[in-house]
Length: 269
Image (cartoon, rainbow, N blue to C red; front, side, top):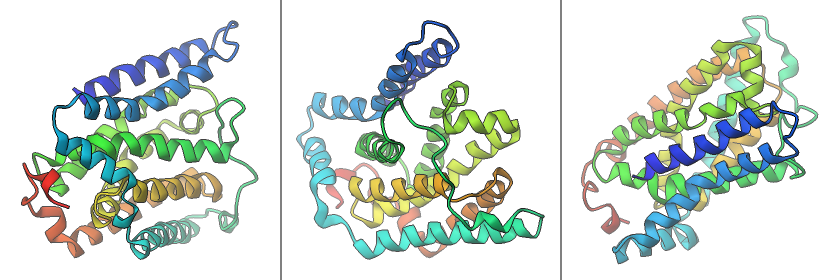
């Protein structure tokens, strides 16, 4: 029910924005629709929790959101550093294939913004609203029935598909990718699946903290926006992320493959 509602309403808002943005009577309507679509996962998550008859689910949601004591700062900092290392390695590999060393620099601005909202604030809102939905309800709803390894694959695919309408809305990061090359669009979808493993790793290692994932998600988006990587380099980055995800899974095999939490996730802190 959660995923059906999220896809239905998000895609209605975003595909409508894609259509209206190409008309003469837009007047900011497409921007409003984009923002509404961004709110869908978090609002749906909150509704599912509040309408639930489970006190444990409601308490768990509150604790995941406000329980800053769950966060292990060194773990979050390490995860951000790993993401930074992934980018450095990806750029170094790209140099062997003729890409510019100027990628080791920051770009002059962001690839997109939403209306008059400052672009940095847009990245903060994106991380905040997505994680309230994905980690607030979605990820646990899948992990309730399977291992974190299986959950990461399932959620990664679902998360990637959720972004689809953005490729048809002008001024979005995804729209810019599609205008360059359809294969860059394919790479975007593929890259999200191994990235899902990194987010699961941060989530579980920090006591299923929503805030920890918000911080990591923000820095992932910030790096992708501000470091001057080419789309060719981002194809190499996908390979590097996949390799790092495999290493993380192998190091944390008990976490990813245990099934002790299945059916009891609310009782396992």
